[in-house]
Image 1 (tube, protein in one colour):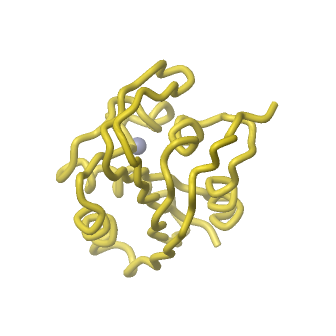
Image 2 (tube, rainbow, N blue to C red):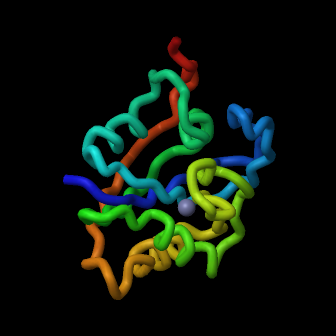
Length: 151
Ligand SMILES: [Zn+2]
């Protein structure tokens, strides 16, 4: 299965997080939505996001050291639609400049909201009307205290 996805994450408190080439960014406590795509296989990508130990490559890898994945909204599709999903989110939420958008023309692929259900509501209609209603997976994921980058 290939396609795009939106990670819905919770950050329990405001904090500075080092985000690789973006440098150190202050993230407010609350909820975040990250829009990505995996045209080589969604399951492997989602498993990577959920795994703590990995070589950090994307901006999202750094944020996931601290933020917990609560839900993933899945949009299986043959074409890459992540930027149009991201633009739909941009109409409703504040974005974190440059995050996850190094390879496209979007201002960002990461959005902040103080409320999980509002982020979910927008994430689940972001593909409308082109895409079918997405699948939502829910997770109980704790942030590991000993979470370190593996080389
Ligand atoms: Zn984009």
